[in-house]
Image (cartoon, rainbow, N blue to C red; front, side, top):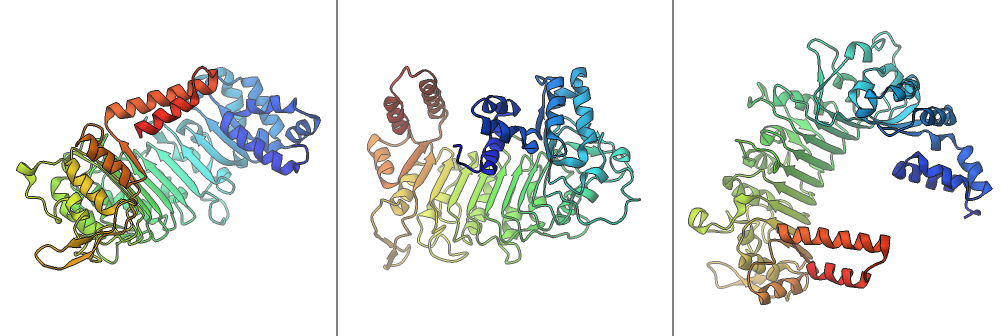
Length: 478
């Protein structure tokens, strides 16, 4: 270890501080003289500062002094603002805000800073209010910005804002935070009056690569004029607990998107309908033809399923498909008859499942399939027989003709569904043999896995059980 270059050791120590906090360093100083010198003479190690309710105010002031003029990465917990013993350290950190390169702070700290001090060095900003509504004091925060000489674009690349509101008539934070330099953006709880307000915000970040939008409840009013936002650099999009997601997504074009998640499972909405956006995204101007991963949870209506199949028919590269929704329950009396146009499982075993798009088999690159609904186990088994990586190549007949075609590519390796109490023992074993991994998603099996994980942690701490036995149990549960 002593032969490692000091800069390599310093980088390793930095990872440790980011993971376990600043108290990770003092024991390392006792290892040897060389390590002690590296730690003492590397100010940026001391510039990773966390302030929480258990912090010691004097220790923090000493740490800040050791950091000298190094770039600062700070974490301030909201509860720390109520501690008088921590007030001097927080005040000192705010005075050093021109040295911040990354900050995770509540709005109460941001309100005491000035954007003119932050904009040139701050690369990463997370404003964490933990779901509590707060107001940005823009009169203080943007003080002096208009009188400042022209600057180069802000250094900010990664932005996450949680429940930020502005007083009427005040300077808007998004006019300064949201620029073409932003690469990752998380907007949560910013309840705009209309969908168009969120779209205008997104239009200011045309080069964003990772986007997460959560807990928005706009009024059900369509934009007064057509507004399309083109995010051609966007690779990952997550929409979580958003009212009227179709209103928002229909106006976003992200043709290079690789991963899409829509999750409304923890959020009740009287308007669950995603077919408008699915229809819009089937058009060449909006189609993410290279989409790799799609997850839809608690966001569909039964009438959306045909539109979803038509959308999937245009995604030849889709490898991960996760559908978690009660609307997919097997109810032949209510929703039948099932065909490859209105049922996902039937479409996946149909040689013409993608006839509305690229033609041929639906999702020919599918590697992982997660479907959490009360489906027909036999229908799921039919999919695995056709597509499992260990299944046999067979000729499949075409409906209504005497001809046959080659089966789909044998790419399916992982299946997640309600398995343990479905079908027969033989059919469950057959399903497991045809793919590499199967996981049961029922509540009982999930709790059992957590229990086994807890036991394995106990082994590592106390060594009281046989690790081989636990590993075997985990394999059996899988």
